[in-house]
Image (cartoon, rainbow, N blue to C red; front, side, top):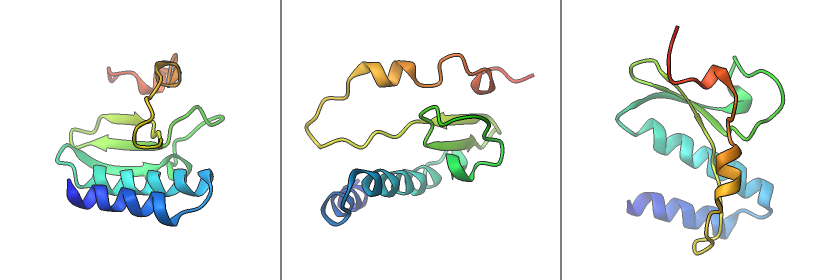
Length: 103
């Protein structure tokens, strides 16, 4: 994915501050997911009309082509930094609105 890698390098090189990098990375992921074949729509959490309550780590809300919702957490780290399991295992825990079954 050369275009994605180039865009990621631009984010790292041109955006200053962790907050700005995180926001830019979320937008980049939004575009990348929209281009994916199984995703119909992707919104930033702050643009999602059904958001409720405090920020729980959700960066993006996507809808699969079949209509299933997907909560997505984006982590923007340095290229060779390992991603620790802790933040990922806590993400979305106990949030029934993100259940895999639909009523």
